[in-house]
Image 1 (cartoon, rainbow, N blue to C red):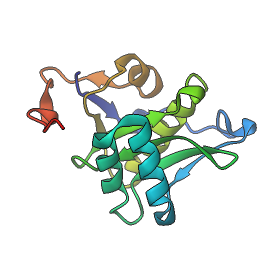
Image 2: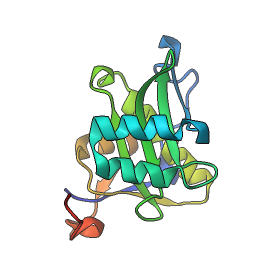
Image 3: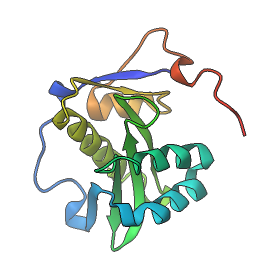
Image 4: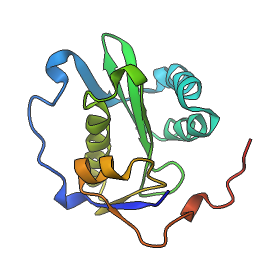
Length: 156
């Protein structure tokens, strides 16, 4: 999987209401009291590697984890600045919520937070769905980036 680069000053404009909001989906920064519930959900849904990265996102104040909720039900998450500064990810959406723009809203929320923090660019490490990242955020592949930062990652 290749790394991808996003030019944050070229993000699509924010619109109101956000896609999905009218259906009751909220995307917001996770709060510290939600740490254990979010990490447990991430581990059950996506494995211990992503749970470890999500745990690192909760070590920052404010947290570096966005969550998508509908009626108190967790639909997805997105973290940043956890494995390396300037890196987006990991991110995941519950199977039942896929195809409903939840992932796009999480991605754009994080990228806008990164832009507000002063980043000019974001790197999407080991992008599993390059077409998605290109379509939503204009991400482009970084030549020669595989296996990149994750080279030699401990396998459990």
